[in-house]
Length: 424
Image 1 (spheres, rainbow, N blue to C red):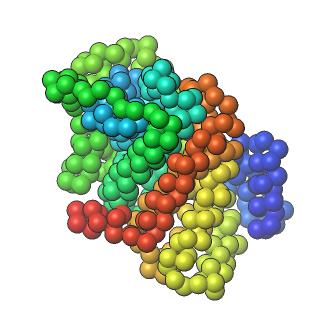
Image 2: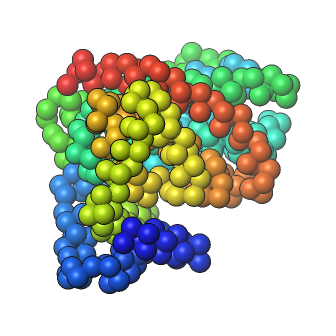
Image 3: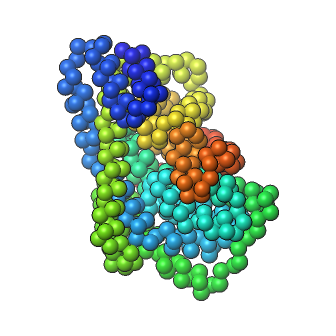
């Protein structure tokens, strides 16, 4: 059954069938040809895959991010970042990275972060002499921070699939998220130096205070979410609902940029995004059920442990495979497919599931800037009016920096576990 399952899946993907549909159809084909189990079992497994209270957080976090994005948050965060980072060499690049870090704490999505900040930053960067390739690569790479900085939709998915604490995953992503941000700013600096790009004028103190005040309501949302979760006030799912309510209040009654027409569009866009993810989770649950019935995860565990039982060696092998997978699978697909396969491996050698979850999300985030399925690359292409070939070459230094960050986490797990071990 295993051969039929994977062969039919890859054939369907190659001929252009959407991933979520391919997962469901390949599961159906394998069950029809190799099992006497009733087809109703697949329906039950699909329903069971989305019948999760924690999973409800995903559409609400998407909605909260879309509301804040449409409510005038992006430009305020860019102004705030300009005050603190624009004065350094490659200033606008640093501003884009810092703004993506701030916005990532609102959206929880890499493509959404790239789109929101890129639409504000790419134009001014090109006007200041930044090349199309540099500006596009900068916002594409910086957008990946949205997957790691909490709240993260991908972390919620990992928590649902493995049973790991979503709250601890959010906490574990804080230090690596800022490490990513700092590393990307370092890449901005050296690339700007090489290209002869200078800094922006220092912003007067009174303008800095104004920018902080303007962005304070946007920055309060992640603090409310994280503070409520870690203070025991509400669960991650309830926090997502609170984020939506807060976003509505800020966008409609304080910033006054979110009217009924925009809100309808936001709800429609959110419904489409959430439906795609939920359908993916449902069909992937069927696929995972058949893999488990064939004991494929157990066989992989035995093979890897036969190669080495050293946790760091195993993590390197797993991360290399995830880097490859991330080049042709979206991060959500990769999580629901790969996490159940590797979870028995990491638990068998004593690797903390929370640490592995953060490392997995960071590694898969790199796939957002690698063709052929790098969503952040395609978003940046559209915004910056640049072809994918040139952008793929320009993003290579950022790609190298993110891989270095991945290896730092492998050898320094305390960077992930420090905050969760001290706060929960």
